[in-house]
Length: 133
Length: 111
Image (cartoon, rainbow over all chains, first blue to last red; front, top):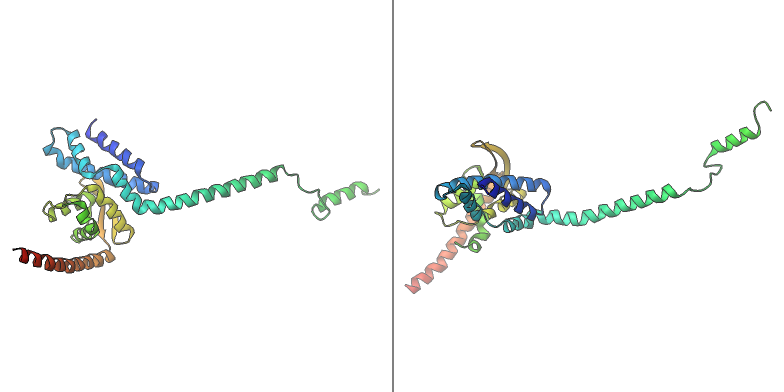
């Protein structure tokens, strides 16, 4: 595994642990990627191989779960709360809509009355008394 | 120095470091290490949640910039961040004087 692969594996793990909106996750991942590349470059003179330099940079950065939990405690907490409340509400609303639509689709509804369908009444009247008859 | 000892001061120190001008995250950690003479060699991952938190509270602003051929997120103090940096420095100095006074007494007695 080379330096870039090692850094990407770290970022994958970090992203799995993050409970923040997708856009924030992308930004965090990009920022930390750049940081780790800088740090690996700085470690290069003390490491025999590039991958070791990346490993040292990652060790200095800290465990992905720990970093993610700090993000989650901040912006993630609000996001998780909103998601926990919003998702069931939206799902309940969608189910209600679907159920209503289904009932309406199968319900033939009341028989047309004179005030509901005046055109039918006019039609019946026209058949009973044709013009010119 | 243990992380626990500086945990409550990380935000203030980040504001102080950024008082010197805009920096990207790696630059912030380097400057923090340099200014502390290597004492604050904390896990670098702790810096980013703090930077994001300070930005969310309006004390920092950030933007993407291309630095050294790479795209980096650069942070700088907002106007309220500049005021907060001065406030935090003043309150730290008052705290330090008080602690110095207490420890100073102990040291004199012990000596």
